[in-house]
View 1 (cartoon, rainbow over the protein chains, first blue to last red):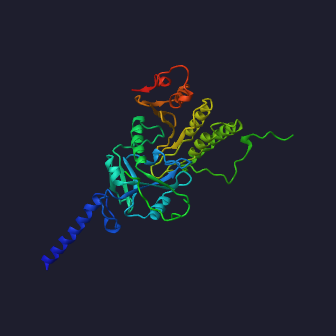
View 2 (cartoon, rainbow over the protein chains, first blue to last red):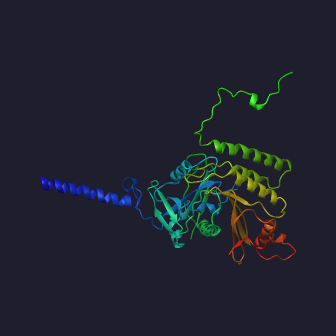
View 3 (tube, rainbow over the protein chains, first blue to last red):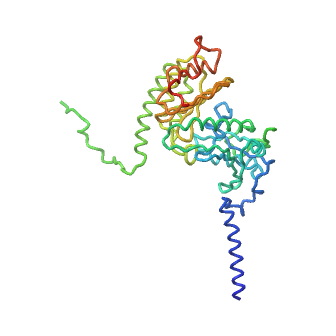
Length: 193
Length: 185
């Protein structure tokens, strides 16, 4: 009986260890997410939510700031086209609205393979939410808390990379940003490489 | 004869109270003062039918962005910063031939102004008290400047001359001459 109990405990511990290894790499929701495969294939498209005033101007032109990394990181948040539909991408983007400073305007689509060909990494990061991924550019955007300008050399490097990503993206301006779904069926296709 | 009323003659209203723990009181004071400043400037600019009205309006709007405006970690855009951009827009009124810059609020609480033409680009980031940025024209090396308290008077006319050649000045100026002494090697 004691042997059986010991074996059972070992088995339970093994299961726990397996799940912990996923937690350690920031994949807490692997079991419940259902977004496979975890390694994003080159053929999968990735989607960037675009907001006014930062990512596009009043005439709807995409600005390089659309691909500025999150402060303190070299990571640009995107959504996985293999795991989220155009409508679910739109709803998620609208969920992150912050009126009146961050207003949803559309989605920009890129090919993960094309991004990788340009020397950047694309990784799943479902710890944020299921379907979340990020582009790692290799140039970190520093954090400043005193509302003073950042290093101009860093700014130029980030701008150069961001402009490369703009060339790789297909921006779909949403003609009805207020509605929850796209007005017509939309296919998210990156530009041909 | 009615007694002369002074502020100290008035009893404090019974319902008025001040919470010493109010974390936003200082911010509200800043907003009130700076709002008046912006209002005065915006009114003055409107009366004079500013040619840079959209720049002024946009900068003033950015000045209302509070902490978290872009999401977690985004710093507020200080009103001082918005006011400095408004002041710059007024300087731009004197520079004919230079288009309006692209204005962008930044997550670190600054506002950037940019010009871009086939000949090059200029990026200027305005902070609460300092200015940094860079200029790049065609194949010449990029010139960086950082932590300036203000830009030289001739800066914007040089931007126009370098990026928009139809307005090229008659005199030959060396690249970055307006920033001479400020450049970061």
